[in-house]
Each structure stands twice: as structure tokens, then as C-alpha cells.
Length: 280
Image 1 (cartoon, rainbow, N blue to C red):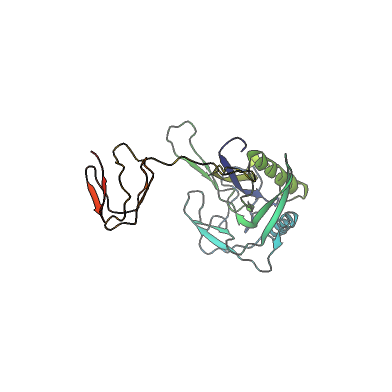
Image 2 (cartoon, rainbow, N blue to C red; image 1 turned 90 degrees about the vertical axis):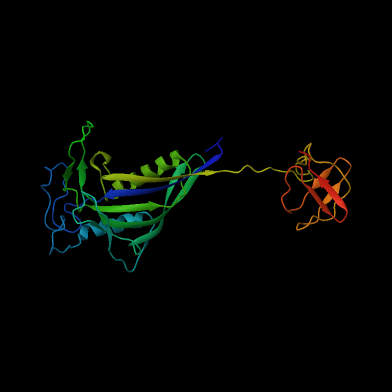
């Protein structure tokens, strides 16, 4: 951010719905606009005794996207359960990938005003989507409605490194991701249908100003603090009991006092024949 004392650091988490006809672990349809709760089954609603089966097409599309993002494909990957309670998550956990994603260490190049810039990608992993909640937009405090049609939809989560330094770069990154995934047929990236979503992590850092010095030029000299009007000038001090050695320079009373016991107003410190008086 030019002209401000702040430095902006942005990292983006992009969720992309894959172009599959069925969900990630069951055969329910992923078609948009179906009647509420009409595309559900015992698997995606998490009923007891059901077992998930991976959608092969979803994994192939995810691999295609990872290669296009210059990611490193893992030789071994696994699934994890992210446990949390929310009304639109009937299983009370989400099947995702945590410590062993199938892709990591990728990058994507974007165009900036300063020229091309490469944004690192920490990971790209598969996970299932949660449902959808419809709240009372009139503010009347009525009941919220739950639609589980989207539960279990295959998602590809792309996590960038915190290397984006401006809103313009964030916009360019999202536009490049959308263009790339549409061109290779991984997703339609229709934001109005929820096929492309983004979580932004933004950090503002205070930039300390540094003084630049030319060669042969002395650093800026700051005036030394003079003792207040309540400190008398006297003969040089030797030592204050319990403190460090103290020195006094010049007749104007330019003093450097060591760290010794605290002296209140009106107190007198003596040691080795020296004397320091603080006026009230």
C-alpha cells in the first residue's frame, strides 16, 4: 500500500465445486436448482450403517487441477474427519484432508502493474461440501430453513501462500484461477450458484520507518536530555549505595544516572563524600 505506514498480506482459500454429475461419496445428483432436500440419501445425510464410496470422476478432475496449478502429487494420501456441529452438517463431521493432501507446493503466475508475479500454493485437497441454510432476511427472528441438497458435493480447496500484497493482486489471482479451471473443464466456477467461493485471510503489518544515510554523512544527532529544574549541579558523584557508578559532566549539569535505589523528591543520596539533592 503506497503512501501508508501499513503493509498488507493476503492469503486466499478458494473452494471450487467440481463438474461431476453425482456427489463425492454417493450417487445423488449435483444438479443446481432442485427442490429442497430432494437430492439426498442415507450416505450424504450420515445415517448409521452407511459407507461412503469415492467418486472416481471427482478425483480425476482434482488431479487435473493440481497439475495445472504446478502442484506436487503425493504418492500416498488419506481422508480425515473434521468434527464440528452445524445445522447444515447432518453427520456432525466433514470428510476432508488434513496432514496428507493429494497435492502441495504449487504456484500460479499472475499479471501485476510491476510485471508477472508468482503466487505460491500451499495445498490443493478434496473435501465434501456442507448443506445450505436459508435465514429470515426480514429480521423477524423466524426459523431458519435447511436444504441438504448440497451436502456431499465434491469440492476442491486451493490454499495460497500469504504472498498477495494488494487487493488488485487478489482480484488478478481469483480471475486467473477461475479462467484456468474453466478452460481445463474442472469447474464452471459460477459464483451465483456457489461453484466458486473464497475465504480471505488479511493481515495488516505496521512498517517502521528507517533513516537512510549517505556515505560520509553522520547519522542524525538527537539532543541529550538535560536534568530538570529540580536537580542541582554539584561535584562529580562516585557511587550511590546499591547502585551503579554515576558520572556528571560539565558545569551545566549534564548527568547520566545509573540504576540505583529510587530517590523521591526532597531525598538526599550520599556516598564517598558526594552529594545529590532533589528539590521539592
